[in-house]
Amino acid sequence: MRAALCHCIAFFSLLTASAQAEEPDYFEGSVILETTVESFSERLPVDLLYWWYGTAESRIYKDGNFRYDIVGSELTSLWYRWEENREYWLRSCDDFLTYDSVATPMIEIISIELIEDRMEIAGYEAHAIELLEQRDDDEIEISRYWYIPELKVDPAWYGEYRVGGADRIYEHIDSLVVGYEWIASFRTVRKFATEIRVEPVSDEYLALPDMDRLQQSPEFDDLRPPCPMPAAD
Image (spheres, rainbow, N blue to C red):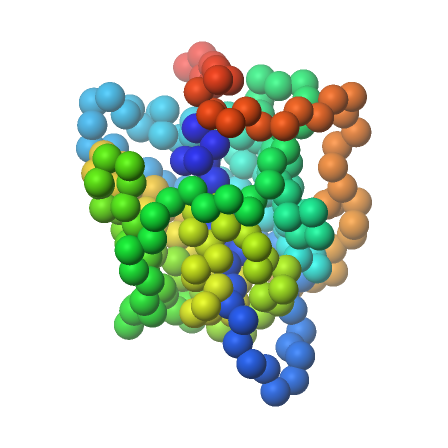
């Protein structure tokens, strides 16, 4: 389950190391995104996909750290600490934080390329990059990411962020990703920014919650049962 969630979540901090004549002002602020899903299998009802990926997200970025709060999802919040190269997350049915390193690759990348695709996202012109990946069952999946060239991020913050193949994309872009489309055999997931705010962020918004217990993620997500979906109204 975590692999599927991280596939969507992790890439929104994608960037690459490219030479800069002067150090840019790196993005600090917040991004609001809306999520839409499509299912192509009766075994994957739309309600379940939204439970996995959420309906909307609020994201806060500062100095390489970020926090995501996800609406309508089993995964309610996620934090990344770049100096630790570690994610922390909170699920709706847990009373503790789970953590794990993001240094281990989770997918096999076939190809990555910049594509001639432009889109207006939240008032900015966004450019696109496309990734092809191969799953264990030999399925080929397509992921496209839209980024805003003027919203820079520092490659050093995420140079070891390998969940979802993100580190490979660092070689091609150096900007904040604000749009995402994942096309798989039985589902399509899209996340696009509706609002982007460049503004100072207080450290308190990025602080981990004061909880009694931390637990490292199990080796296989199946060892931990999923949180039950809330009852329909």
